Length: 351
Ligand SMILES: O=C(O)C(=O)Cc1ccccc1
Image 1 (cartoon, rainbow, N blue to C red):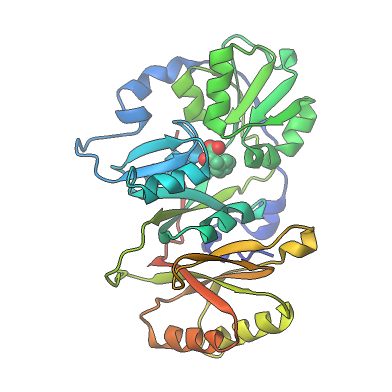
Image 2 (cartoon, protein in one colour; image 1 turned 180 degrees about the vertical axis):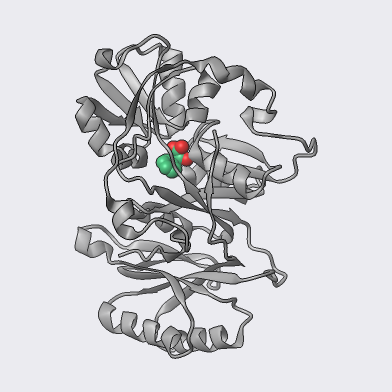
């Protein structure tokens, strides 16, 4: 169960409103006529009035992927570095080709992307920032292609999952590819006339495809939370404003008892949790999750039970330090994944 309270700021729709299915809109073709607008907007179609692009952010996918929007929203003047996989994006930070990597970690429709979290646990990177984006999906096709000519749809697995109902209504065969913008690029470069891609309207404009339908997501409230990651810094980081900390508690058994004790360590000190996710991979018939022990010369340790916790507060706070000490006393492995400024905003991109 993922508690994604931070994705529901006070003015957001209620849970029932979010769950209520909404209908996507089939459009009479909005052709790529607005393409020129992008050209004047600077690098990769993003506004760029500052010529000194400072931080380099690696993301999985091609230009126009949602992760790139997340990076640009979090750090407006950053330079973005497309990577084939999330592992490559993380490696780019480790080997100095990038200063940050951006990773989608959970969505209101599907909960936590555990595979991405698992990836994070294997490497020595820290969370420096969180960003939540409202994700709109479009159905894109080669110019002139009509919906009735389509047989197949390609996109990132998360996008295909978020648009399951619309895809079934359209009667299309779904095929997962690495990322949404990559799907658009593939359509374009192979001139696929029986295939549509699901991606952002901006990706459609970037690669000159027609928008056949928009608002394709099954739920009207579709928010994805991304994390920005950097190499660990040795100096203590001070977070200005409200801080949030992400951690993992890993162990090899007795999962309910550990969970209750962890919850009690926080609740007895009035520390508010913003995320709680329990991952017992063996229940799913999967092998253990490998976690890098940054204190033990970077060795990897296998765990069958993992508890991901995000809480309000910083590791500098006395109450938090007490809670962490109490948890460390339960013979479990604890790793702080990052302490960063809490951002409860949901950013909506106006494409
Ligand atoms: O494929 C992309 O564009 C990504 O950045 C991954 C993704 C896919 C769907 C929703 C959010 C992020």
